[in-house]
Each structure stands twice: as C-alpha cells, then as structure tokens.
Length: 507
Image 1 (cartoon, rainbow, N blue to C red):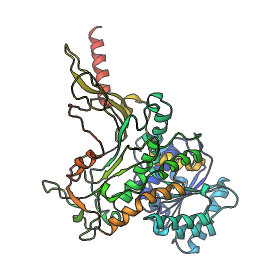
Image 2: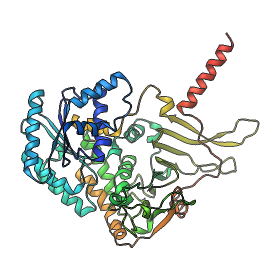
Image 3: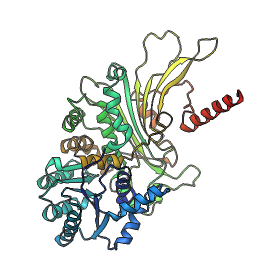
Image 4: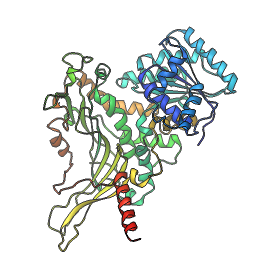
C-alpha cells in the first residue's frame, strides 16, 4: 500500500516523542515504500538548531541501519527532512513555517498537508490557532493528528474539543491512541467477527469475566514529574485499556466504514455507568523487597509526599443484553514483576462435570505485547493409561506461525491511516466524551485524596489486595498446574535443526 503524496509537518520535532516514535515510524513507512519518495517532512519546534543538528537528533533512534540498502534509504529519507524553529504562540514562527512549506511543495508539486502535534496539551490550542491562521492550505487536504492526553477530565476535554472543533472539521482531526495501531488490537475485530466459534459464545451466557492487563517492569525512570500530573489511570487506563475494552465489547458494526465502527464503540461506552471508588484499587510502588530498586518517591522529579497512583485496578459493568452481569476488570501499573499487555477472557464453569474433579475454566488470551499471540486454554487428557486431565492450549504465537512476516510499529500503522484518510483507528469526539464521563467522578475523588493508595514493592505483582480484588469479580485462578510451553521461534528453529540432524543420520 502506497499513500498519496503529503507534506508532513511534525510539531514538537525536538522532543522525545518525535525522535523516539514519530520520525522512526515515518522512516519505516519510507523504507518499505508506503509513502511517496516525494513526501517532504518539516520539523517545527522552539529549539534553535541548524539542519545537520536536527537530522542527527531525529536519526539517533532509528534502528537496524545495518545494511547498505537501509543506510542508502536513510540518507534519502533525511534529504527529504527540513527544520524550522519558532515559538507556538506567535504568528511570526508559523509564517516562517508557511514560507518553508510553500518552498518544498513547489519543488515536489504536493498540496496536501498532515500536521502531527507531538506536543503537550497545554499548547494544543495555540498551535491549532496558529496553524489555521497561517498554514492551513486552501489548495488541498489538511489533516491534524493530536496526541493524548485529551484533557484531564470531562470538562477540560470538552473545552479542548470545542476549541479544536471551532477551527477544524471532525473529519480533519485524528486523535491518536497508539494502542489502536498495535497488531493484536487491530486483530480483535477480525478474531471476533470472522470466526463462528467465538461469535457464538461472546456473551453473558458463556463468559464469566474479562481481564485487561497492562504491566511495565520499569518505574518512572526520571519522568516522574510529567507522570505525576496524570497518574496511571489517566495515562493508561482511560485511553489505552478502554479502547481495548470497547473493541472487545462492542456489537458488530454495520460495515467497515470508520463511522460505523466508531458508532458501535460509542454505543457500548454509553452502556457503562461511571466507575465507583469501591471498585477501584490504587497503589504506588515503593522500594523493592531487597532495597536495590528505588521507590516512586525516590525519583527526584516527583513532588515530595506525592500520593499519585502508579498502579490501578478497576471494575466496569456494561448494562446491555450481551454483557449484563459480566465484569470487565482493567489493571495497569509500573514497576511490576513482568512486562506484558494482554486480554484474558475467562469462560464460565461447565455444568455436570463428569470427571468429579476440578476442571479449570477455559480462557481465551490475546497477548498484545511482547510476543504477540492468541491462545485458548483448555483441558484435555494427560497421555497415559489413566484418565487424568491436564491443562493445555491451542496456541497461535506469531513468532512461530508467521516466521517470514514482521509486525509493524503501531505509529507506522496510524500515520499511514491518517495519510490515507482512514479514521476507524482514531478516537472520535463523542467517544472521548463518553470515556471521560465514566472516569471523571472517581478521578476527582482520587485527586482530592479520597481513595486510598497502597504501597507495593518494586518488582511485585502490585498491591497485596490484588488477588482478593479480582476474585470478588469472579476471576478464578485454576489450581491445576500450568506452564507456558516452549513455542517460540527459537524452539521451532531448534526442532527443525533436530529433524534435519535425524534426516542426515539416515543418509
């Protein structure tokens, strides 16, 4: 897929997000031929630097430049990049940017523009105003990518949406949540709506509960000052995990049209009442049990005595015929025991168990990262003379099944969607409004210190009450022993090598 030619303008071009995510994603698209060779990329930021310094900055996080072909492609990509320095609240900077845009567009005969705001929300509106006044092209298409967070609560989100809506049409605004670009999140609709085996049991009659989990092994690592403004519930749960929830729970859309998909997501969000504080568990990481890893409060950028949560678990309920009585438990945290994002759909117990022993519940697990996989945990006979049961799985691990294909970066997916005008993987204003409606009451109580925050050790599974918390919403951890099998690409390669060796011995 090759997109039409656009001029891409990256605001905040000297910042972490741009150099670590935006520019590597743009290069990935360029390298694989998904954007036109004539696409020009113009960076804009307050930092004063010349073009060589800019190119050095944006290329430092581009990985795997280890072949002559990739090195040549990077040189060609950087030739297409220029930089303009200016402030965000004065016309002069935007006028200098417009002059540069007219120059590069005249050279390449391109009239369409994609503005990427890799910026903090405090400057969204000044930049949006400056763009509309000085850089909004009347010769072609204008599209605006806006990074999260989209406000701090329902009121601030509405202020932001109203201000952007006064300047740009909804079909010009692309509110990006990079989780919607992740391969396994994009796979949810296909998994649900093309497989009869799942479609027929995707409801309250068969499913006991749904767990959506986000775990990071690292803490804030010197970014605590920024994180402390938002906390884990705003930073991860209200956006990333709620996007996953809406895709798991929504009804089938009327079509694959972006508006139909987003209509279905909004419909299910409207059926969710605001989360209540009695169904929320908060935590903040302390030192590791051996004292070798620091607490959240040891981060010099964190305000002294901060009560900001670095872990949150919350239960949500959907009041519609499909999901009535099925709790959705969302969990997210930093400084935990492992790194993973997964969706775990736990099915109900079987009736009339013939084997007169505990049989673990079936679980459909969608592992978003790392090591993308879909697997179904099930019970079967243990090989041997008896009738013992064992917990096993039907496993689709991407590394072993799709050995010749690579999983694209989420930002590559979404930037290409924006250039193509595909909005189904971006957040619509009413969808954003519903998400904030659900979270805002409890967030305000958290901000006022009315919800307790428990300390948990760095490197643990979270607050000690977590197992009890998820159990109250019907989650059962089976007592049968279970270990994840060796099904990685490494194991597959080892098996192939053993088979080859056996074949050689017969020659």
